[in-house]
Image (tube, rainbow, N blue to C red):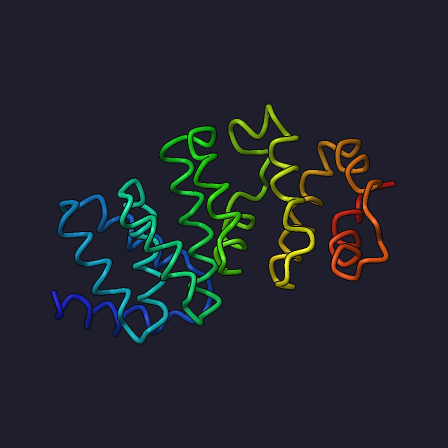
Length: 205
C-alpha cells in the first residue's frame, strides 16, 4: 500500500488547480475496493505531506462517512489541516455525508458541527451545504436553513462569517422576503454582524 501512496504522490502532486482529478480518483478507488481496504488507504493517504493526496483522502472519508469514527475524524482532525484546499474538500465531504443519510436525518450532526470549537468545522458545515435551499428538506423548509446559518453571524472567525453571508445571499435569490425579514432584525452597529449583512443583502432591494 505504501507503493500506492507513493504513486499517488507522484501523480497528484502535478495537479495545481481544482479538485476534480482527486475526486474522480477517490470515487473510482472507493467503488473498486473493499470498505476496510479503502479505509486503510484513506488514513495512510491523509498522512501524506502532499496536500493533493490529503484532498484525495478527504474525498474518501466523505464516501466512508457513515462510519461514526470517520465522521468524528473529519470533524476533529481534518478541520485542523492547514491547507485551504483540504478545507474545501472537507466541506464537500460533509455534504456527501448529509446526502448519504438524508439531510433531515443529518440535522443532529449539522447542529453538532455548528457548535464545534474549531472554526474550520463550522465553516465546512455552512459552506458544504451551499446552496442550502437547493438541498432536500431545506428546499421545503428554508427557515430551518436560515435559522441555523444566522446563528453564526457573530462568529469569531471572519472566514465563517463570510460563509454565513454568502450562504444567506444564495438563499435570498429564491426567498428574498425571508432573508429581508431576518436582516431587518439585525443591529448593524455590531462590526461582525455588519460584515455579514453587507454580503447577505447584496440582492435585497
